[in-house]
Image (cartoon, rainbow, N blue to C red):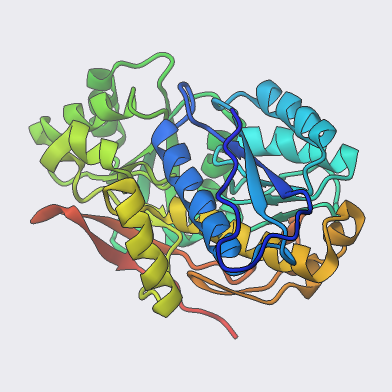
Length: 375
């Protein structure tokens, strides 16, 4: 799948070949295709804006898009192909396990990769200068989510989980953060339980919250419906830290049952002028409210365009430029640093909030918790 962006309209063409960026995006099942659609909308819009302002020193910026379909091997093969095609850098990916495979291959090839959305802490096995990330690491986001649970009076946590490095990592983060504060986490294996059996287990363990660490739409949707209809669980909080309720499909499939399910959302409390402008343009492109994933896509290209203008399309210089980035993104000023325990260059200031869909207006979101920022 090759989707070149529009040529620059705000400056004369120089006749030079385009500067290309390889975009890794989940566009088909079993990937979360709706998240991929939002991610690609953000990438595409930013490319159009870059070209409208003159491109990369008069050269058009183009995307070469590859569908990862949530398959790590497919993503690694796409990285090889894109490197052979001569892309200046890689961008995108939503699924953490897929991004990890792409990052490992990009690092081995010396190809710069700015990861848009994946949060798994161990994105690469060893520290690397070739990979940077916009989304906050999972350890930060899920600890914030654990603090929200405790603040809401929920300390007996059950997690409905499926086999995955990502879900296992999230469970460990929750357990390690909650245990010293009097909380507990019990795992419910969705390979062995039906949604009805999950309800019985919640009663048995006297859980006050159930977190959905499973695939979407199934079995997540069936679990939510079962819990909502069980009178024994009327006071049980359902949560989805990975962000399933952010996208429209969740509301379409669940209606009112999908409201009041808190999730992690990587947006500030208020967008600035750039964020508002980009949000309006994304809404027009998507014909619906843009998710935080779309903003991540836009910010990815904004950063890469700045790096390419400053350092040129040479991958070696791009990889060495992460610590010098200072870009105004849609969600705040973007700078990269080394964060303890994180092997890639990280935007340490990425915004995090806990939000949910308002039961009175499921098409709108409520902010439930914003962490106190430390100096």
